[in-house]
Length: 486
Image (cartoon, rainbow, N blue to C red; front, side):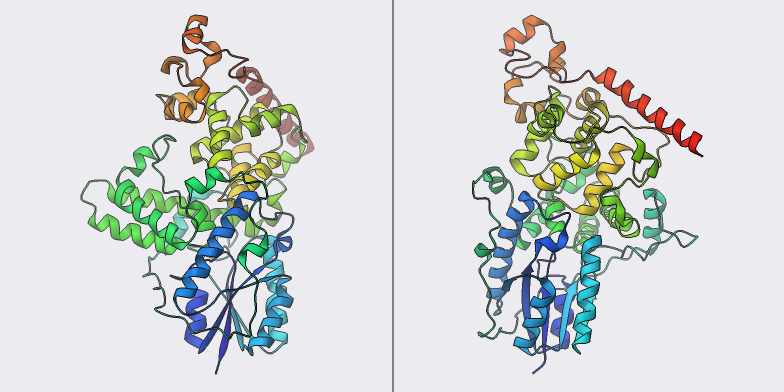
C-alpha cells in the first residue's frame, strides 16, 4: 500500500491545500506531520505572539484532522532527520509540502529535498501561499521588480482566479506505531500568561479564518474602500495572521471576493474587490522582493541608507515607543493596540514606524524586531517591506523622503478621536479639537478633562517639527555623500 508524508508547516488547513491534494491523489495512505524546529529559521525565530498563535492553530488542525479519521503527528526537529526517520517508520515513498520563501528556509528546504531524493524517495513541493511564485513575475528585461505598481500590473495580466480545492471528505488512518508528542509539549504558550488580549481578539485555525472571510464578504467588502484607512471602524478583513499561518490561502480569498461581487447589489463592489486583491498583491510583492534580495531582512534595499545615522540599541525613546508612552496619541494608541491584541491597523503601522525612524531616528530594524515579537501576523517578507518602505530605504516609487505627521494623520483618519480614546482611556474626556495634540490644549480644557500632561499622560518625548527637519537634514547629507562618492 503506497504511503506519502504530508509535511505541514505554515499551511495549517485542509481546504485548498495543494500538498495534501497531491499526496492523496498519489498514495493510498497519507501521514500528516508537523515538525517543530524554530531554530532553523534563525535569525528570525518566531516571536512570542507567533508562538501563541501556532499553539492554537496546531491544536485546531489536530482536531480537524482527527474528525476526518486521521491523526496529526507532532515531532521536534531537526526537520531533515525527523522526516527521514518518519519515512523509514512509515515505509513512505514520497514526501509532499507547500513552499516557504524566507531565505533561511529556502536553503534548508533545498538541502532536505536533496536528502530525500538521495534516499530514493520522491520529494514534491507546491505553492499554497501566494498568487504568483516570486520567480514567476519579471520585468521586460527579465529582472525582478523594485516598484509595486508595474509589478502588480504585470501580475494582473496573468491573474486567473481558480476554484479552490475542496476539503477532503475523509483521510486515511495513520498507523498507531507512528508516535508523536502533544502540542502542549512544544512549550509555545507563555509561562506568564500575558495573552488575555490575544485570546479575546482572535480565533486561530482554519475555522476562524473562514469565519473572518465570511464576515468580510458579507458585511465589510462593500464599504472597504471608504473604511479601510479608518482604524476605529474595523473596516479591514483582519485575515493577515490566518494568511501567514496558511489557515487560508490567497486564492481562496480572491475567489470568494469574486463570487461576492457578482452578487453584491450596491455599486462599487467590483472596485472594492479589486482594491482588496491589490493588497494581496502587496503581499506577493513582499515575497518577490525578499526572494530576489534575500539580504534585505537585515540590510537596506537602497544601499546608500547604510550610511544613514540611525540610532541603535536600547534607549529611553525606544522604550517609550514600545510602551505606548511617547506623548503622541495616535502613535501611543497604535502601540497599545499592538501590545494588547497582537495586531495594529495598517495605517497606524505606517505612522508608528515613521515616528520611530524619522522623528526618533531609531534604526528600522529595532522596530522590525519589536513587531516580529508582538504581531500575530509577523511575516518576514511583509515586515521587511513595511519597515523599509516607511524608513525610506526599501522599494518605493516616491522621489522624496516620506515623513508622516501623526497629528495630521490622526485628524484625517481618526477625526473624532474614537481610536485614540479606545486605547488611551486617560485621554477619553479630551475634546475632539485637542485629542490629537493634547499638550497644546488650553489649561482649562485639560483641567476640565481631568488630564495633566506629564502626569496622567506624558508630554511628547520629541518635538515633531524639529525632528522632522533633522531627519530631512540627515537624508540630504546622505544623498550629497552619495553624489560625492559617485
